[in-house]
Image 1 (cartoon, rainbow, N blue to C red):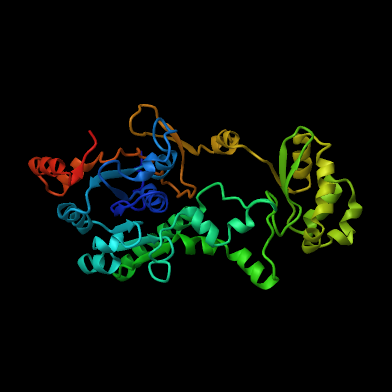
Image 2: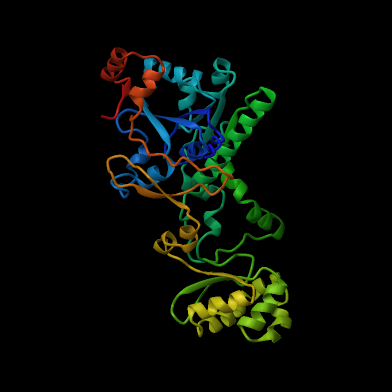
Length: 403
């Protein structure tokens, strides 16, 4: 029986002073690739995201999603001894990630320049709200603030009301870029010996995702309108209700697809040459008349009949699922994308999806979600602290252990 290949980041140690979403998402992806991730949490409850809700067997849904396969140590970093223990961890680490409040890392001596002066091979990754420098560097930032300032809220929702994205897109974007930045820095270190610093802000990560509407606005003269679940600059591209009351979303991206929709689904091939709908911009300009035609046709069809006709025409389409329907999606089930992971305080495992990037022959570890301070004693012992020293650190409140 062949031995499975080592995980891609086996042997890489990541130390993270992290909270909330962006940094934990970055480090969870590194853990999924096999890195050892040591999560440094504050005594008295740890990462505040642990208390966002209690829906997953008493644990917060955000925390369970973001923190599998990590080790947790609780340290008082405001105490000299707590800082010294962090330095001991960093001495053996490859990567340091933090998303502390503005100025907090500098006050603790955890700025990238200071870190690299003490640990030249360390890759420091700093996640901020508005950038590490500049006029807003001292401001706090949360996901929805970044959505507001990038203009995302102004183009999301209905004509009557702007709507927050249903997930934390700024945090997720920042976590993705932090992860890719760290991987790039590790590659650079391996090939050149130089360990670059990595800086990511929520605002600039989401600003990158706003590239298309920014170009559309600057060179088109007006921003994309808020059109609910429809696409602002492509039509028809949105949900239509079938005779059974189910919404089906369809997308027509070019003239060939438009002709097929007219002929096969709408049964009116003459619309193919109707000047109101001849090109993409024409269809957007006459969206109301166009959608009335499509809506009228789908309202007379059953859901399966509508989907079959759309498939026959080569039109991309799908039912508009609820979250419970997504959880039971046949693609995820038949492709074996679900795994079981352990969470603190219960013997009942929870379902979690495999990471979306499949690496041939490599299975993500999908380890348990740690309790706050679950690994404190073990980590301190690995740093050379005796049982007596560990007991003293715990008694003094420098460190905190679960149980």
